[in-house]
Image 1 (cartoon, rainbow, N blue to C red):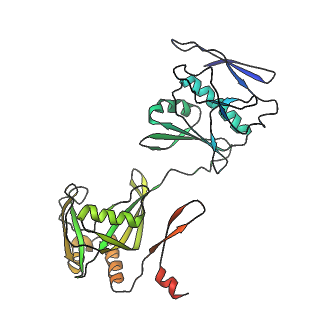
Image 2 (image 1 turned 180 degrees about the vertical axis):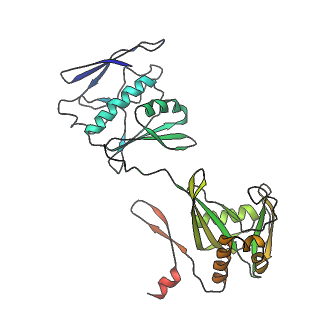
Image 3 (image 1 turned 135 degrees about the horizontal axis):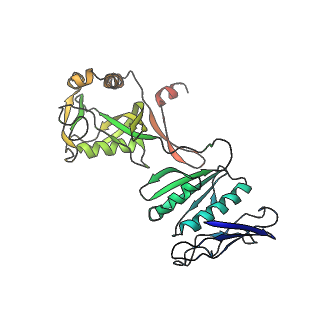
Length: 328
């Protein structure tokens, strides 16, 4: 792709071989004489080596004679992130990556993140050839990352856990809300189990548990407490799993089972639920029923959510407020 590099008076010229069916003019990268110390901000400019099919190329150049490079914003950890938004010839993208990495290296940057929207996924191969690797993907984009320092990287891993819930809903008759599933590993086995599900992205555990019970059974509930949770690994696409057992207070009793996923739903006497061979032979379920019974009898306290704020985030702290209040 690049056949020759020459430097004269602070000007680097990259002479590029023509690709099939197109011509490439020399690429000139201008570096300030003080070794990039003036680099602070970017302004949009046109690039000679980009495709001429669009008029606002995604390339920036320092105002005072800087290097042509990708636009980027600094993250909180000494790195930068750039988000591609327009098509680019792969060879031009490769040259631009190299010049950008050189500049960011001189600036002492660490991690470099590139966000590629779905329509530009073809540039991923070029980025990988330049040393980037896949970090994570969502339905509309792919995120790649590069580590500049020679030491082992300290970049955060992709999201590692899925969050699920099981809902313990007990009415005034000491009957527990249970379901039989149409799909999954319990299909057709006649097993009565707690309503379960996965918490959605951006959804709190207590909100997700209320939603799942409503979806599967039609019963309205109020979240009471997290009673316990279990962690497992390699549960879903090699990811770990956090499974929260949540106690819920029923606000309605009428059942309207979800047709797509639930074979049947009912209010079952708590003792009858406990006697199921499936429950008695399953270690996790035995512990769950013991905990739920202890909570019902007043011998156990779970974790109640308290809305709290951090410097940049709003969330919930789950804690045993009964025992904490007794010490105050």
